[in-house]
Image 1: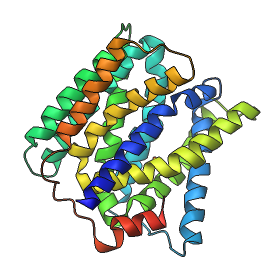
Image 2: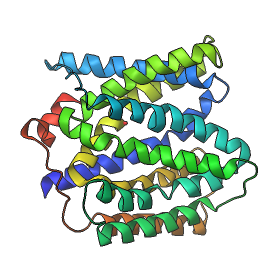
Image 3: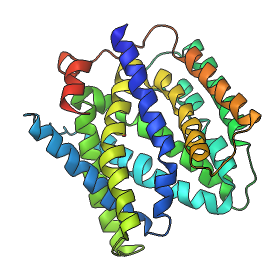
Length: 304
């Protein structure tokens, strides 16, 4: 029970950190996308490497069956997700993109168990439906034109793949190792692509600060926390916590004076919270961690 509560707290904290970081990400809107991602993930990868070796550990080398999952995760759940999220907002209102992205918990609740060879859990599905409804109310929906809908759906697919691709490899290597390898791969791929598309430029002080915050503070911590939660709770149950991202984004916007708090937004946030409670109830899926990755060891060696 204590391990489950730790996993829930880890997943919730990771989701809140990502959601609250939206204003920081906005500081990089004028910087070349791929080059910015490469620098952000390079900082995160180096920080994770330093943490591992300072703790006296070592970075496990992925096996042949791990590489496809890691490459797929980087291509779709990291670089692809960020690119689709940016371009989607050029053809759709932010509320519409957020509403489509908010369907991620339901997709995970339905697909993750099927991938694992079991039936979807009723409580996980019901909780995900409530979360999706809360996100739609919270975001207010919105309009789209041109490829806006397709790009929003691709953004949601990227969010889902960030979790699904990681399930097996996290169990074999551990969340910290997966986070480290993904950040290093994303830095190399983003750097190579950024050289061809978008180019490079010296970041301003404001942009450099954003990269450090997103890379060293957000990515290194949130990735490890999220993958620990997924490994312990299962992708379907942990997925409902994704609904906390827009709630945290709303809270950050209100705190910064960029948005007013309305009764509708409060209702949406309450629905998300209720959905999380429902989705996280019931028996934990068969995702027990091997002894070397139990929470105490994991938290000691690491801490997305």
